[in-house]
Picture 1 (tube, rainbow over the protein chains, first blue to last red):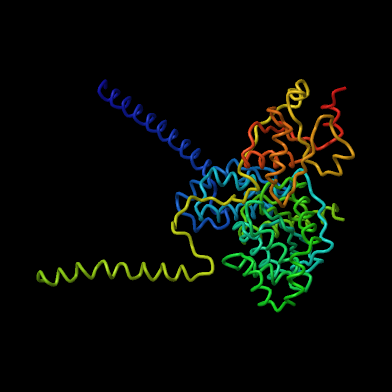
Picture 2 (cartoon, one colour):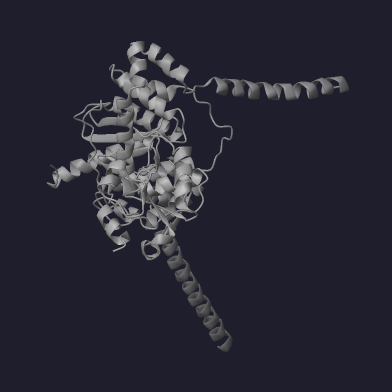
Length: 302
Length: 162
């Protein structure tokens, strides 16, 4: 009897030990799974590799959305009807993760998006005398303060120009000069732009100046010829003191808004702090359009 | 393969490897905007062209107000604004957003400062930019206020001797 009892005791001990260990593992496994984002809810997650998922995981769990839902991105995505702003944010973060952004950078991107979408101050910027690219009546108005020798201005301005041509009903794009003192050809280039504008070729000259490999007096003359400008008038206007004053006014305006470099981009008066490429700019423009739509729905529109 | 064939292969191999590289370099050079040499750069997207890369040292408004005579105040607002309202003892040197400060203006400033440090005053971002420009031009002992002031009347009141 004794050996049998002992055997049953050992058996029971082993059983309970196994149960305890099993329970422990089951719960710890559940905890781990609960901490992992539900990738089926994340738009575009199918294309992510393990490293990219690892980079995204932290921001999805702790990064906050700034749409109607103010919870963490993952919680907002888990809602029965996810907030479109959150979906847009996550889609953008997934894209940057694929492009190589690490976790720290993804948090920076989220922060700049938040700052761009809901800044402390919205500036009232005049565009009265400027020709728009896209329709003047478009709901989103973007103004860029740029320098023709700054490569990031080229990236931003060329992208915005393309977006305004692709979506003329969505975007009215305006260009203002902000020539940097460290770039010797940027002021003459700005003068060439305004002089061409006087002959109705503002945007054609804008495109030509950003496409040009080198900027010099010779290239300004050549571009004028290529665009079929009245050479004499064009040369006279490029030396016109009034145009220098106009550029000074535009730059001072940018400085007054706090710009300390170029490009300075304002989307419906809100300073944009994000990446200056086509996809990110288009994303911000579409976000702003949705924002206007949702404000109108809520009765906050003009 | 015999020895001669190996030798020929060894000579041809680097040539065959170099040809596509050369073709890629030439094609890249022909692009309107050539691509960067290094394919995998660090992921850096928040870039811009700064107005200035230099910065001037700062001084608090209180410290300046308490030792006003030890510094030369350089007012970088427009000449019209300076004529309308200015701080006693300050000199006008307007900031030009398009053109760099001239050598004559710098020499003139050197004559007026009499060895004293210079504090650039004004409103908004202009004193910060102008002070940085003076530093960039080799001027020593150039300061700006720690906290930029947007209200000129407030700044004038804080720095008035009475």
